[in-house]
Image (cartoon, rainbow, N blue to C red):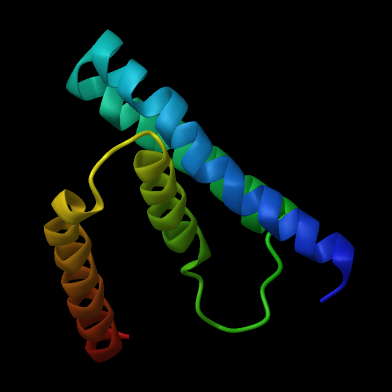
Length: 111
């Protein structure tokens, strides 16, 4: 991987959790549940297009879980940096890992 691809991948991975932390809650506050749907469409759609359509994130394998990892680690790091408790987040982290594993298992049987 070249230095340019490293920088582009870092920027592509940074944009997603940054937009989630800056915009998602505000859209929900302003528009209620519909704001969550707007955020899902605009934030996820826009960053997916930048990362995979434009090609900000370098892909070397077949698994496309990069945006999920970027969101998970970016939001976790931002929360811990802001003073949130990592131990309080552990049940959510474990639940997300179990849910992701079950989802991948189910998809492996279906596809």
